[in-house]
Image 1 (spheres, each protein chain N blue to C red):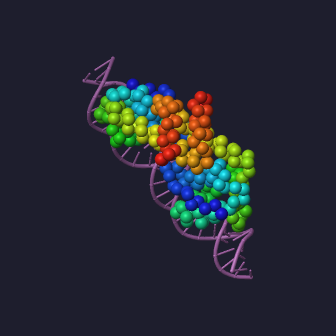
Image 2 (cartoon, chains in turn cyan, yellow, purple, red):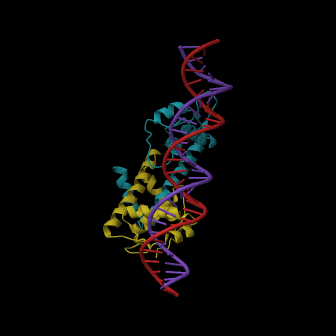
Image 3 (tube, rainbow over the protein chains, first blue to last red):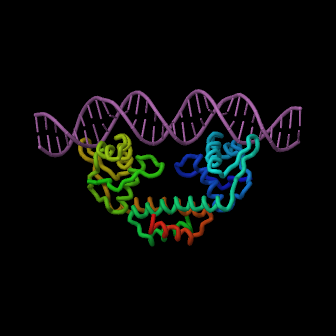
Length: 125
Length: 125
DNA sequence: TTAACTGTATTATATGATTAATACAGTTTG
DNA sequence: CAAACTGTATTAATCATATAATACAGTTAA
């Protein structure tokens, strides 16, 4: 059973998107593997203090992307293979790196300075 | 007159926030200096094909942060000193670096791998 | 001076995100 | 079997974002 024990609500992004990205990151990290059971919509909504519909929206999106399989009446499970991991990992890493680079460039921050900033946040943060 | 010629609408963020961050980044980069005139709400809204109220919201937020001064009837101008530049620069760089580091960590990506990803996007993009 | 601009304000409408309260059919388990 | 869970669906209400259509008073420039 996937626990969501290190899930935290952060920033302004919609909650359903935060759930989606949380699960994708754990797939990328390898801490979620094929067949892992997800908490039910009702359980997770209670744990996060959000509406069951919000969790349902996140799960539906992941199902449309092929990362979740749901049989009506039974618990939903993750569907993960090596190709999926590589795809998700590339997808998320691209977004993050691309966003940081364009931001730093727009601010006139050099590549070396950007590396130093990241190193500083890697230690503390 | 600030031209907005390299402004592009990107991502899902509210438009008024994109305008705010665009101007802050140019302040951080030094390509906007003290006293620079802003385009009027109506002109910018026409240029970006958005509603004047959306531009007004962005300008109002910047005015509340002290980066813009508006005299009713005349063009609004930027208010920028060295302290402001340093503050904005630190603020934006912190956000970006912090976000990337927590994302990479959650995905189990090493510091060295993160640097390589950034270098790759610095060249291409 | 006056016409064309400026900032500012108000009211209305539409859409997306979220909450809320249910309902129903399939499954798991005691 | 029956109770308690499961996924799924519907309808209604609230809030933020964004658009739309004006209105008014101050500034600028021909």
